[in-house]
Image 1 (cartoon, rainbow, N blue to C red):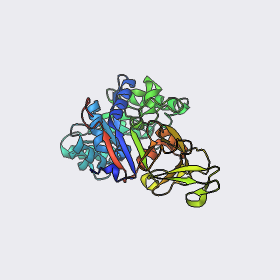
Image 2: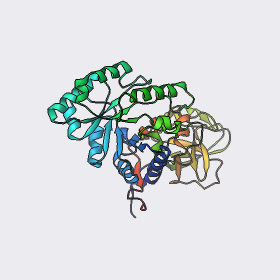
Image 3: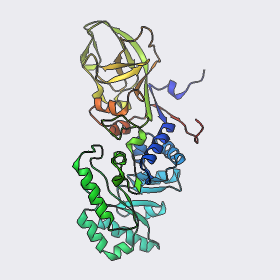
Image 4: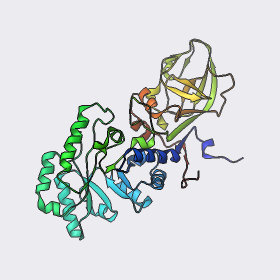
Amino acid sequence: MTTTPQDLAGAVLTIDLVALKDNWRLLSKRAGAAECGAAVKGNAYGLGIEPVALALWEAGCRAYFVARPKEGEELRVILPEATIYVLDGLFAGQAEFYAKLNLCPALISIEEAREWASFGRAYGRKLPCALHVDTGINRLGFSKPEFDALLDDAFTMEGLNVSLLMSHLACADDPPHPLNEKQAEMFAALRGRLPGVKASLANSSGIFLGDSFTHDLVRPGIALYGGNPTPGSPNPMRAVAHLEGAVMQVRNVKPGETVGYGATWEAQRPSRIAVLGAGYKDGVPRALSSKQVDGPAQVFINGRRCPVIGRVSMDMLAADITGLMPHSVVRGTRAEILGSNILIDEAASWAGTISYELLTRLGSRYARLYSGLESDGST
């Protein structure tokens, strides 16, 4: 008998690379004339930088965004010809590291701009960079006065090869929010100071705000991986991460008996309980724990949703399967924790968090499988 990795793991995480590529193509089409890049920071939002980056390259993506220079180094080995932007800017004293790997820093201050220009002069050529301007989120980036000061610094500007002007939206997932239009207007005005330079403002949700947000390059992140870029409306994206926990045991529980640590859930009727091999060590939030008889958190077993009950523990969680046909769930049956039936945003809302956090915290004990690793037309 052949033993597979999934036979030895309590849970299986399958990454659907075909769905990933379909999501990128949908976003690319939605972006119209703008180029569609991809945010692959944080190990491709926890799903694996190498298979994800290769799949996106197959789909047609050529511009990638990472957070840290070490992420850029890893990605450069995988995609030698890609354009790679480092969103966290130029780390102090590390210009040579960026230059040797052809990484494009998104410069966020005059200090960084001067260091990059000075290094370029010593290196013998003007090195490409992005300029990241802050238009209202108040995180990284040039303020308007700082941006004006940079443009007035002729010596520094002459040493830069500015390939992109970018900013980041604070409230793109809330279309009516007034800050969206305020940021769009401010960005358009700043862009007018650098004619001929490509511009990027839209993240995943920003792509759906209209043409005034898409400019020349969009940089989706969470939507690529199945998160809903249009909260409050049906999710146009396909699920990419599919997490299934194996049933380790089915238990019969009498009325008045409790399940799990703290005895927080008490059976109100004769109940059947499935114990699944996935817990908070695996990235299943402890906040999915429930004292309630019927939810809110659920898993999907044999075509039906079943409520998570009691406390999620380190290695396991429990679900009430009383409503399923007797003997339809046995040891080894898999239950969907995340996927096409339990959407990532829905599960995140049950846990009081967001899809980004849920994805990036998925653990390392799973058997990780990738579907669609080869070129289009193969699986």
